[in-house]
Image 1 (cartoon, rainbow, N blue to C red):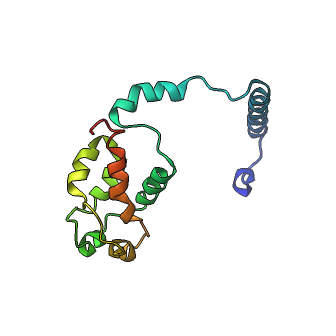
Image 2: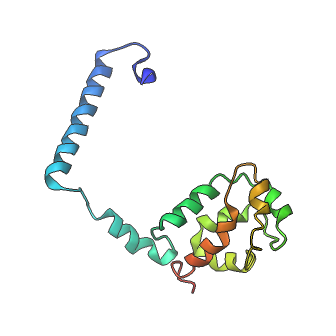
Length: 146
């Protein structure tokens, strides 16, 4: 908050904060009395993009994608995996491009050895790679490639 208030205080800036506060409060009052403001955006998004595999993720899918966003493509995971020969930049790419999941299913290991987790142990950013193949395979029907 100190960053917002830092610098010269002007009437123009004060008026901007006032309008911001009014707009925020008007929206909250509208939500209180009218319920959730839904203009159909989510429905239109799904109609337009579901055929491309862009559909809502469940909680486990969101956690996998969030974890993969930390990948820095260092390649250490590839050196440790006894089952896969996937270039490191493909791990996060497959989770982000679900329409390409059919190709990912061919590249990713069929099953990680139970308890292996060598790829996760060596990962400098703590990405949970072991969950990626299962996530990609679950995404196949959603991508329209099953």
